[in-house]
Image (cartoon, rainbow, N blue to C red; front, side):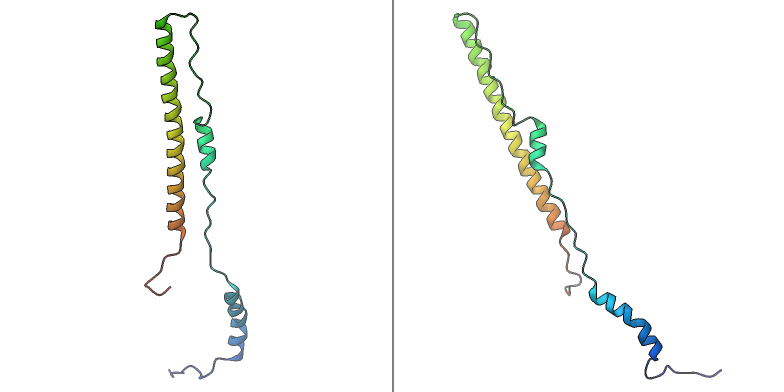
Length: 115
C-alpha cells in the first residue's frame, strides 16, 4: 500500500463545486428574533378597570340616617373606583416589565467574549 499525499493545489472541479456554497454563505444574514408587543392596553380594557364606577343611588327620603348611609355607600364606590385605577396601573407596569425582560432575553449574547 502506497501513501498518496494530498496534492498541493485542490483540483479545479473541487473549486468549482464549492463556489456556489461560498456565494450563498456570503449572502446569508444573521437571524433576528422579533417579538410582537404585548397588548397591554387590551389587557386593561378587558379587565373592566377603565369603565366608569357608578355612584351610589340617592336616598328616597330626607332622613338623616338615609343620607349617612348614602354618603357611606358613595365613599365605598369612590374607594372601588380608586382601586380599579390602581389595578390598571399595576397591569400596565407589569406588562412593561415583561416587555423589557423579553427584549433583554431576545438580544444576542456574546459568546466567549469574541462575538
